Each structure stands twice: as C-alpha cells, then as structure tokens.
Amino acid sequence: MKQTAPQTIPVATAISAENSQASGTTLHLPEEPLVVIQPSNKWNLINLKDIWAYRELLFFLTWRDVKVRYKQTLLGAAWAILQPLFMMVIFTIFFGRLAGVGSSGVPYPIFVLAGLVPWTFFSNTITASGNSLVGSAHLITKVYFPRLIVPAAAMLAGLVDFVLAFVLLIVLMFYYRVALTVQVLFLPVLVLLTALFGLGVGTWMSALNVKYRDVRFALPFLIQLWLFVSSVIQPSSSVPKWRWVLMFNPMSGIIEGYRAALFGLPFDWPSLGVATVLTIVMLFYSVYSFGKAERSFADII
Image (cartoon, rainbow, N blue to C red; front, side, top):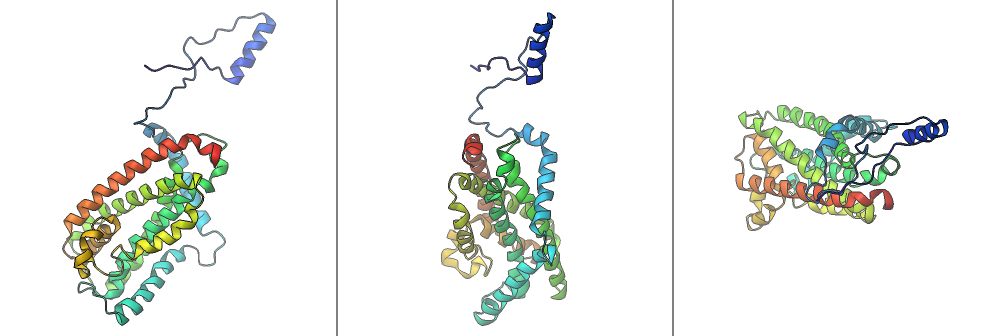
C-alpha cells in the first residue's frame, strides 16, 4: 500500500501564509498535496517519462560533449578520422603484410577498417560514459534531472565521430572498388546494436566509477584486451577452435555483421542472435543497477 508524505508547501506559499496570518487575512491552501514523495518501485527505477521530459537537456549535454571534445585542438573533428586511419595502417603492416592474416577475400585495409570504425565508436562510448557522471558532478549535486541522461549524452556524442569515420570507410571502399550490396540495408540495425551495447556497458561503468574510482584507470586496459578478442584484426573463422568462445562476445558478432553488410559476405546469424540477446540483457541489467545506485550519487560523487 502506497503512503504519501505529508503535504509539502512551496517556500513562496509558506511566506505568503505567514504574511496573511500577520495581516489577519485567510489564505486557502489546496486540499491535495502539491508534492507527493513515495518510494520507487524496485522494478521501475528508471522513469521514462522523466527522461522524455528532459529530452532538451539530453540534446544540450550531447552538443556540449561534442564541442568540448575538440575544443582548443588544431585538427578538431579530423581526429575522428585519423584515429581509425592510423590504426588501420599499423594493423595492415603488421597483421596484413607481415603476419598474413586472412581477410575473407576482401582487401585487408578496408577489412580491418570495417572492424575499427564500430570498435572505436564502442570503446569511446564506454570511456566517455564511464567517466561522465564524475565529470558532471557539479550538475548532479545541484539540480535534479534523470541521471541516465549523462551517459546517454556521451554515447550520442560518439555517433558524430562514428559518422565521420564511416565516411572514410566508404571512400576507401570506392578506392578498392568494393561495391555495396542489398545487405547494406541491415546496417542501421548493427549501428543500433553497437550503440545500445556501448550504452549498457558505459552506464554500468559510470555507476561503478562513482563509488570505485579505480574504474577510470582500469577501463583503458580492459578495452585494449577486449579489442583482440572482438574479430577486429582477423575473422572468427580463422580461429575455428575458439569460435564458440567469440560468440559470447557481442562485439565480435556485431563487427562480423558490419563486414557482411558492407562486403556482401554471409551473415553469421547465430553470432548476431547471441549478440542481440546479450545486448538486451546487458542494457536491462545496467539500467537496473544504475537506478539502484542513483539514489546515493549526490552523496558520494
């Protein structure tokens, strides 16, 4: 049974009531409470109506993150292209040329770039979202708004870099004369999966980072390890003995899906199915954990 808190009267109303009593006039207060405070349902810790109501703040924080990221830099947004481009060159030299890693019949530079573009978006989302709450402590301790907006804004800001890097990938595909097929229509689904999985992991990391500041130091190391087990450098088919292990890494199946959509390769539907299920599970778990931890953010941040 829900219990409402005692009637709460705004400060301005209380002052008016005191002035009215002093002057001998009668002030009629509302019969229903103006503010009702009640415990949240443990299965409904995130209020979607609140998030929708604060959608303008989400847009503002996203735009702020985009501007701050390249503020006072000489190259600006060009770094979004240079980062995957340099990594593509390094991987092509060491893994494509020297190690002779297979690339499913696709030129290795665009093969590895097709993995680096979504991976860079994913890794930047985790890093930015994981540190977003601590970086916005001045807002969290002063005003109320749905805290989930902060890591979500960090993820949306990363989409700008993703689009710029994806343009580079398309240009190189034309250079190597790799034509698009009808499978490219599946690309928006893969982008959505990447964004949701990155948001899920980033939201969970952001809540942990508020309580345990070691997270910010451990994240770069974990992301580097994660890169080498995500089918970025080589296809999962080149390691048949460990393919079933890679299936439980959602980013491995998602990256293979990008290559299938862009290069007309066969889709690995079992891996994509497992990646979709794990993405949904991760997102729900992170949102639930975030909602439980949110109550103490302002006290310990």
